Image (cartoon, rainbow, N blue to C red):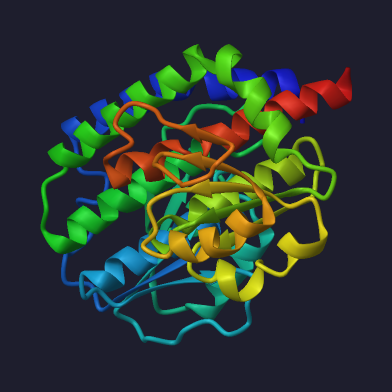
Length: 320
């Protein structure tokens, strides 16, 4: 892994997103799939599972039987031969994901991958390409973002909705990402200084965008090797609040949860350092906004770029 190449990968996000939007306008990547599938099992590890968890919850909210399981789990759902398994792996070589397919011998396997030919595509009946390009820095960043987009396209397929609105959203996310990158010199040092505390970084997001907190925390662990923990915004008051009392607690909030007031209830009296992204949060040390952040799905596709850039910034300092 290389911090300079990781930053270059991040800088290519807007162009890659626009290319992906063009693909969505030209064809449905899930056209082979019947809208009436009996059940969908999403399999993955790491960031693949983060994206899959949000996607499965969204499908269930539309009445589609769907679940995301860590590929390493030995408690795989057994839904019978009508099941569609979407195995998510950017490299197509995740050993846990490949092994999990043995637990679904009668399912139709779809590979969602960034690699054209791999052990995963050999075992799949169909392949959906991420179109994220080679990630030279060795960190799954564009492929994570593109996984979210392609799983949103799966949602459109299974709920009978057109892809054009999704392509529009992807283009808006490209605009938002471009803005974040072009203005990074102005905001990045301040954000990094605020969230990178001596006791690590905590990230909170609404359940519908939980992958943003999970991916952001992973980027801080994977690149600069800093302690970082993800939490769901409503659950924060039940599991994370305790650390605000006796540590130098630093919180990056992806705003927009109806339960953000539960966080404020404890961070305000304790003078906790909070940085808010994509929406207002009272008493935040810094509130960070960007174009189209009033659209929740644009937030989902864009906001992880902020902790990714913070990770690149901190990682470069470690290497130097």
